[in-house]
Length: 112
Length: 116
Image (cartoon, rainbow over all chains, first blue to last red; front, side, top):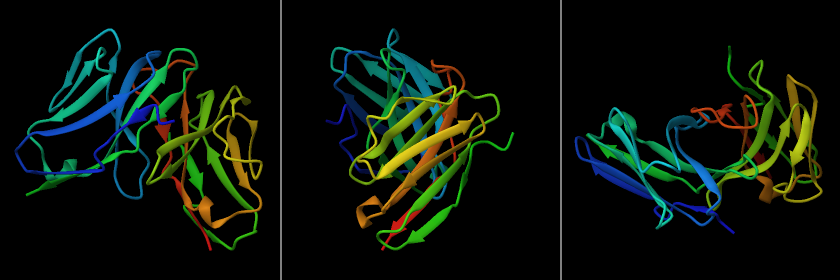
């Protein structure tokens, strides 16, 4: 059972446009959500997070939106840059266990 | 700090052989996690330790997998005997405390395992 799902394996956008990466979850006990970015041959690195008590968190070009009623979150990157090309993982923390559960990842390609 | 250090970076082994993956967490971090990355399931949590004690190993796929953390600065993930379906990238991550800080976990660069 995949508690965190990223249904789009890949996304391609033009440089300067907006990238929107989506993530759905099933467990209402998740209380914290994070996005990680992964380049080839490297480990995932933290990008941005949001607490379940908020619906938006912004950090520069990156904004995460949380819709608790829909159990959905999204990462917006604007404007997108070629250096943003990477695999993006959505992750959620269970307040019961403290474990981070990750999605399958979405490969973003930003074309110059 | 050098970050989370994993070795080897790449491992190619024959089916049936024993494989040992190693991890050195960030000094001072007291939680350590082993993840496996596959195309189908993304990053799967295999096991995690807190203060060197295994807390949850429910993600370990089968008895062929075992993990140890003999001290705060070292952990191993062993597969014996290895099978081709174990081929994946294995990541180790560490964090401070049971709860996340704003930055989540720090991951190592991973070990790419290929079992032929």
